[in-house]
Image 1 (cartoon, chains in turn red, cyan):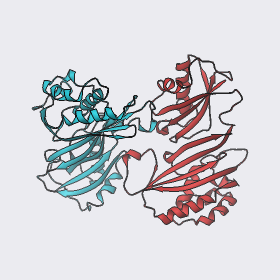
Image 2 (cartoon, helix red, strand yellow):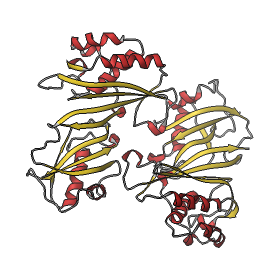
Image 3 (cartoon, one colour):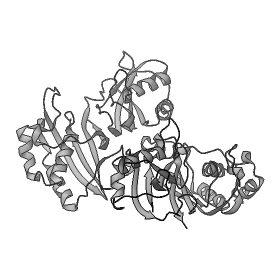
Image 4 (cartoon, each protein chain N blue to C red):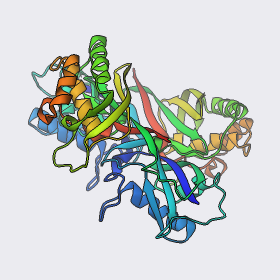
Length: 253
Length: 253
């Protein structure tokens, strides 16, 4: 059996999820904590990679003994979160754990992932939100939000999303399926929500930059399909900064 | 004339408000930003000192030209916040500015200051709140909150607060007046609010530690007057950590 964990993290202090030499990463912290807890080296497989400064309200991973496809422990799974959190830094917290079978794969078995991107549209800076959203110093009215919402709807479906991919990112296929999108306003905050079976490098952040251009009237909502079809990165918007992005929900098959 | 500013800051990255050699401080950042904005060295007088890791939802200060008791600028006061924020780090933000007379003093003219202390009472850690509240891993019921509220009421009035002062802090008088207190619950968060004409070193944090002892049943609410009267630091509770403390409001005469 493998151990399946759900965690949350504030990504500000980390060079992303995936282990790197000489840089703090979420996976690196999880490996160290698991080794301290179990007394042997562990392999952690995450549901996704997140970039430097990107956060997770829900991130999933499996834990096995290093070099094996299983782990043995007498620790009850309902005790595991508190036990492993004692060895994790305060900006990472495991909140659920359960046993899963050895053929479960934390990344391959994902049905879809939902991301949210938070934009704070205000001239006033909020020091308490500086690393948790994109501070965009311009107020947007409801009609701008409606336009963003309409534009986001055009992302839904199965498309080649190369127009929304950071250049120089080699992937086998640039076709992905987006299941749903939404744009919600909460006072001065705008939240873009998007769920898909997979995302290209920087895809949500480029989609966000494109939606901001829609809000500003630089792109009309109905231009989105032609931008998508063109596969032309230069027609999409800027890459929104990492601090507004949260992996929000992971659905397994 | 002097410039009077209101600001907010997240204190996590700073060794408190007051300038220190070789350590980042809020005052140090304000001095640097003011010099960049005005083109000459400035003196900043704050309404208070805050400790390392303590935050402010409202902090007040005056800005004058270094060595003088006034400043001259053609910059309109309604433009000052955005202008100075351009030179401040994202965890500090000025949100209001106005002209005040030369006999105004940012510290001496304070009528009262209101602090809030946030405690998150939960077994579950929240990575997004780790440096913004005291994570206390125990759930407290409504009767515990009622006891804390009752105990806090006993702090009100004019008393010698030496029992709630960090040892080795030399002050002329340990008598202070507390104008009001409250203890509010917001789901798993408990907020202790206290306003007074002045606070001894670590006073709010020691009051908070004492209220937690009340919540745990180690001290009864009606023991507070006798603890206060005793002046005995060992009878009060622990010093709550800095990350839960916020200077929340400053009232001038």
